[in-house]
Length: 244
Image (tube, rainbow, N blue to C red; front, side, top):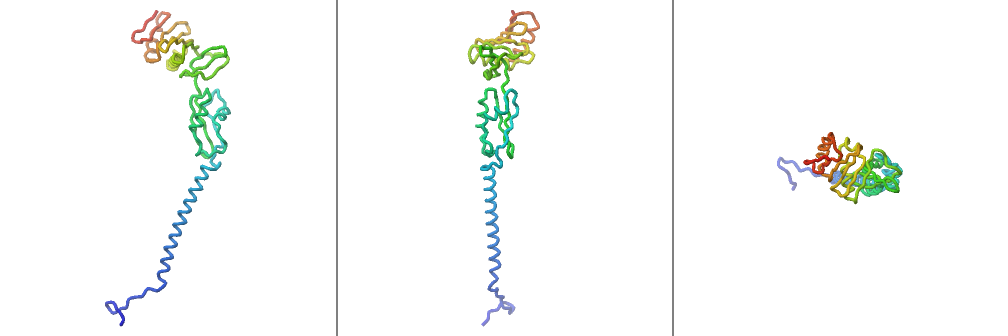
């Protein structure tokens, strides 16, 4: 007896090979996805190797900018960047630390410029005073660092006579923060203590400045005092200045 469906029609039989094309399509899609993933992994791996382990993107050029008294060769030698080192593997902090060992360097910024350049942006120390000794003139920056010695004191820099590190720092801080119109007429500075900074002006008048605090206020008060006669101008306590 033959089974029939409603209406008297016999059900269609699926050909024996009908499942094979569908199975092949599934297998093909699986292989495509598999090779796509594998290809992506190989591409990423190749890119990582290219960037981190080959000299293709390596430090082949070291540019130095911002220098005045230093030479580019001095900076490159201090940086000690091995040619061909991949830029991605360079330790910028270590390079900057090595360059900062040069006494004249106040700050350094290490920049990578792909594909093959390292830029070292240098900020050299700026002298605010000079200490004259038997071996020459020692240059001091705003933080009181003695960073260089030259044969003779350059014109325009005041000489400094200070007792100890803290007194030196107070004096150089004052010199670095007073207005330009005042610093231009200062020819000498003494500091026996950090609170006893004194400025000698070009006309030999003396300013008792005191400590390195309240610089704008003291400068404003001194500007008014200097229009009056006197040899010594005391602005250590700017609210109660005196002239003698």
